[in-house]
Image (cartoon, rainbow, N blue to C red; front, side, top):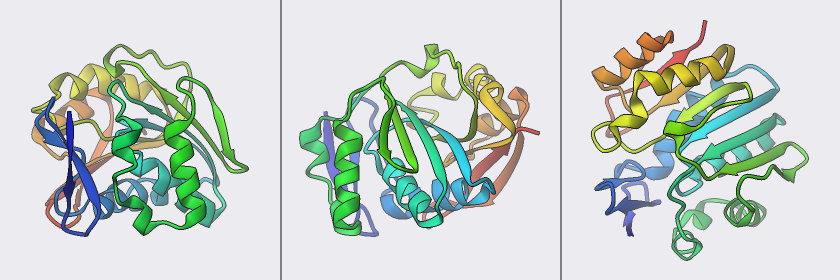
Length: 218
């Protein structure tokens, strides 16, 4: 079960009763996604063609913001996202993200949620999308990526997701110089990323969050 929360920047997030945690920062869902995953992740990459893997599709906010930014910058993006607990479309339709995007982008957002799972879909000329319904802890990669958005529930809510084993798996699936961004800067997260081989940089976070992390495969 989930309930809708209005965050400080006016955008919605969801609260999961299963994990006793919200999907985004209550200081601003839109602000958080733009800062951590677009500004610190996507915009840090210099390639004009990117393969992105997202851990935790959730509301689809990171995905639609990536589509928008990629279109604006004419970047070719292949975007894969994994989610074991999809949000039902009735709940998605109640979120107010439509207030922040154009009519054309609304159609894309709906398509991201309505398209079939485990199948690559051509959303636009520059954006290919695949939703994977699977337990990330048991997922085996068979492709390489340039950028990873790590957006699971908090380490104290889903500790197994943040293990050094999972970070080692992500390290191996990244191309050289590939990066991972995440909202959590907890000591155990930094230590497990470093144990997996990443160079970890702690950065100032958005409003309400002192620090975030960007990790790179060297």
